[in-house]
View (cartoon, rainbow, N blue to C red):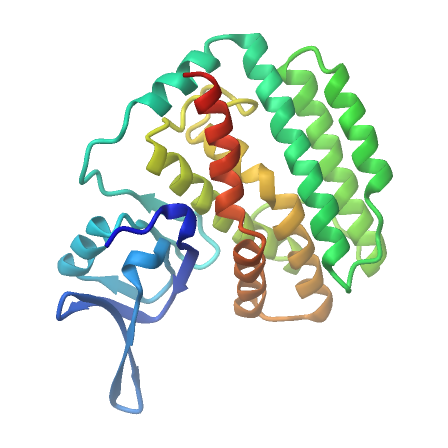
Length: 290
């Protein structure tokens, strides 16, 4: 049986366990009070399996993941995940060819980048309004950003507007929750740590989307052409401000531990169909370019 990746559960995160194969099923094993507890992993219904600290993976388990088209990721505590995709079949070339054809036309690339930003803004409006904890209204900020998008004559101007948007959204949440906040990745401060961890979850979904379609990560819309995985960051940006940023501030304000914040973020990504949205936006481009 084959399940489309768009119909799979997004990311499963595990830590302090062993991932093994048992009777041709994928399981993870934890030891509690000298007793081994086995839990099934629905390999055919999982898009990304992210393994955190204290995990191990057997060869047989890796084979099952490859057969089930599961993207594997390994992440140390607070570290950048390393995503590993098994090339166990030839990918359909039409999507990669269509994307590269679009990418080589600078005007089309800029137009698609603006299209991505419109989708991003729509999700921010919808998502922020759904959180009972958030009273900050991003409407004016988003309206101004869309106006700057229309006016942007090149990628650098669009990137500048995008950077200002994110900064202002951080400010809205920081003022609402009464915290002094400056975005500094990899710093020992709750909101920043939670943002780092959540962003990596979004990167995992984006990498999965592009991997399934066979589109190279090195053909970005906005991020630097020489930056590794640049297109992953473009696709992840569709959901980060809408689903990751609010969860990070809510958890930081509540003083929740990292594992609770991660569960909140994973629930957001799943409930809002983040992976489905990524596929829709990327396919919209690829199918229009064929």
